[in-house]
Image (tube, rainbow, N blue to C red; front, side, top):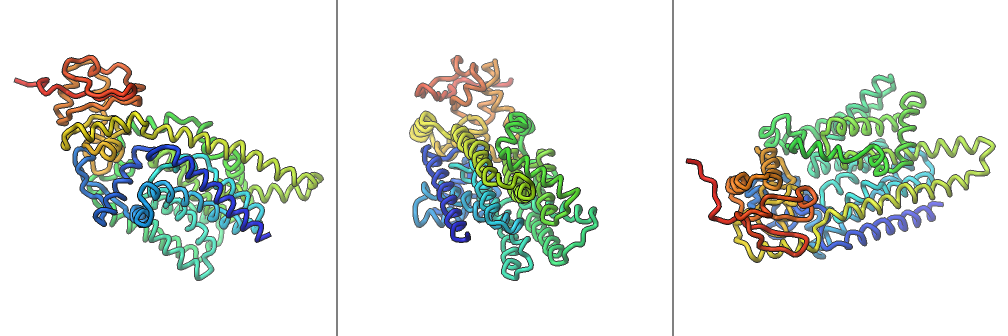
Length: 498
């Protein structure tokens, strides 16, 4: 059985990674604007050996906050291959690694190879995780495997080798991504649940958990001290403009959220949580439940991005699904329907295809639609060749990193808002440039930011179909490829106050 399981895991890993890579290379670049901010970090490390701290292009010039571990990992791989290969292959392998990690967690929870193997299949195709990581460069693709390795190490904490691995993982997580605070909240809720239910607390686990909380909080305070001093308590909302934050949550319904998590892991995982928390009190379920409740609270308070929270929930519920499936099979085997168990296995595989694998590909295709199109790439190339190096370009916030990375010009705003005092004001001003009905207001705002050009893409057109600059004498269309237009502000058009 172990030989078969090993072969099956390798085959599953190969399929997931191959599909992930093939979809990633179906587009010429990266799928999201924010990925290019991370791309520039890798590029700068390869050129100088250091991360990009002082960014002359983002917001027309700003200081960036950087947790560099992920960037050095990608840069190291890029050194022995190429950066274009590294930025797409590394995320795919990290996503594929979840198959082995989740198998190990599920086997530790159930002691059944077949159930653990089924769980790893669902883990490889959590729709939101599979889709959002395709052709996407982000430290979060490293954080999630580390997070679940940490959970596995905690389950094996009595083993001295895993004790050492556990604390190495804690240190790594502290320097990969600020999401480490999810672990802190999850542990606090876990200990609270154990206390409320009057369960005997394992001393080694308690000491490890408390030390983890101290290390992560200390690391976050040291690393993010400047962010805390700059933004104060509002740093937990990442300084995202309120209008943009609300928009990201209102665009997703509960039905879509469940589909992105995976219907079966969601239903069975929630059932296991409710059953085990109130009836069959298992410490492992309390641990996973504490993490799940913590993420749910953060989502409710809008303290983490929606898709990040859904990835957490999807993978945590997949782990809980393993317990639920074991309980289901055990129940059926003791009933008169025990001869139908093989058909239940066939059914769950079909359901996995319908509710996890197919939605993963469907959401991935939709995710890739966010990528810069061939029209965008042509326009960026024109900007790079035809405009002065100090030019400031007006573009939507979700196109700001495209401008900085692909067009190599300054933007007014992008999607990294930390250490920016006036992010909400800039967000509103850019929106007004595209939406105002008054020529004088558009000119005044352009002058305020010393901007010379407006980037009018198909994305902008879908939001602002009739901008004033398209028919104004103060703005000249200097580039068009049928889909994307670029307008230059006439230098003679100025607003003067006497």
